[in-house]
Image 1 (cartoon, helix red, strand yellow):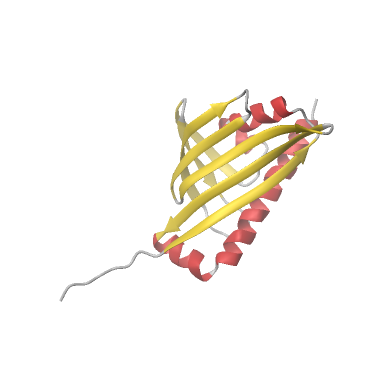
Image 2 (cartoon, rainbow, N blue to C red):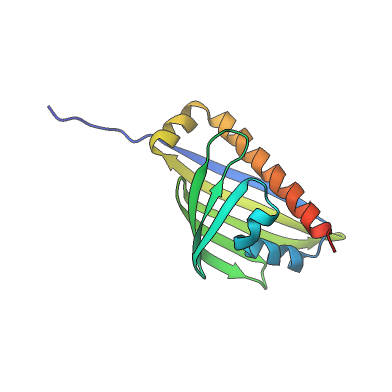
Length: 153
C-alpha cells in the first residue's frame, strides 16, 4: 500500500493603496529601508538583514499567529520608485511597492501574491476570509504608523 499525501496550498492576492501627504521620494526611501520597518509598523515585530539584499521579518497582526517571512530584493528602482521582493518561508511569492506623486503628496500602491502551504495552507483554506481580514488590519496598522512617522519633523 502506497500512502499519498496531498499538500494543501492557498493563494492570496493582496492589494492596498496608501495616500500620504509626504513626497513620493521620501515615502519611497522609507519603504526601501525595510530594516527599519519595525520603527513605524507595529505588526512588524523584528527585521534581520542577512546581507544588502536579503533578510527576514517576523510579523504578527490581530490573529495570534506569528509568521517568519524571508525576502530577497529583486528590484530597487528609485527613479521609477519601484520595490519588489521575492518571499519565502511562511509564504512564498512576491510583494511590490510602487510610489507615485499625487496631489499634495503621493500614493503608495502595495501588491502581494503569495501562496501558503502545509498547516498554514490548511488553516488558510478553512479561514481564508479571516486571513484576508488579518492582512487588511496589518496594512491599516502600517499606513497609520507610516503616516505618523512621516509627520514628525
